[in-house]
Structures are given as C-alpha cells and as structure tokens.
Image (tube, rainbow, N blue to C red; front, side, top):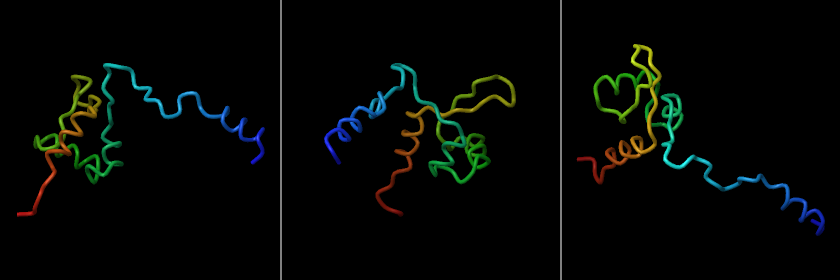
Length: 90
C-alpha cells in the first residue's frame, strides 16, 4: 500500500470505533430474542417458562398489561450465567 493509501485508510475509520457509546448510568437491556441468540435458552417460549417458574435471569416488565414488553438487564444476565457455573457434574 502506498503512503497516500495508508493515510486515507487511517482517516476513514469510524469516529467511534472501539468506544463504548452506552450512556452512563443506563443499563444495557436485552430482549428475549437476544438471549436466545446468545444461547442462554433454546427459545423465547423456554424463557417464558423460566420466568413463570422463577428459575431464569431476573427480568423487567415494562408495562402492567399482560402483554407487557420483557427485557433483561445485562447485570442480571451475567448474574444468572454465574449462578450456572459448575466445577463438577456431581
């Protein structure tokens, strides 16, 4: 790569590359679909069953209605994953 091409490539980087743009004090929230994509549960229905039984990650319900939006705080997901950690199978 020539010198001018290298200089151009360096200036074409996104302005916020590698910088966490999450606002301070606002927790990162995940939808049930995002947790399924992460492999924490096999399906959104399985997450609903986990919520009903009280065995899954802590969640927030953003509306009082029956069909209220469910989200999970990042810290709750990390706490849940930590609680699943095992040293042995027995």
